[in-house]
Image 1: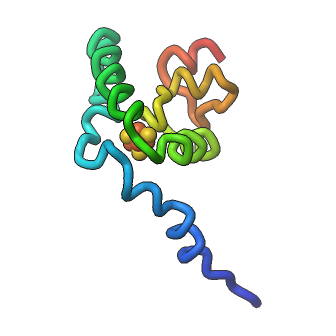
Image 2 (image 1 turned 120 degrees about the horizontal axis):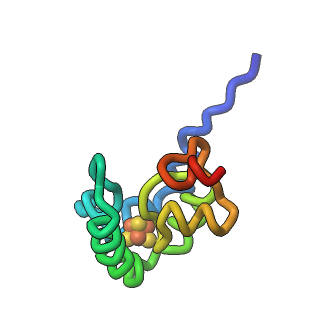
Length: 99
Ligand code: SF4
């Protein structure tokens, strides 16, 4: 049986992850449990401002769309990715009820 080592290719494809302007700011990009809508809006506005200045934004947005990520990636929220046709694998909250 032939095995393929994909770890090197994946690492090279994802080098951009180490260059994100969000390094150390995870709390702005992923919600806390039971986050209120107003708090989410404020958090995502702050994340958006950081993404707007990030030079790997396109890589990040493409990655999140293709991998159906949760959280705020590449200047897009889960809702924005969902609306663009990149649906979450396991919808939660409003999206789950609307499906
Ligand atoms: S685009 Fe936004 S989420 Fe993506 S790496 Fe840059 S700052 Fe982080």
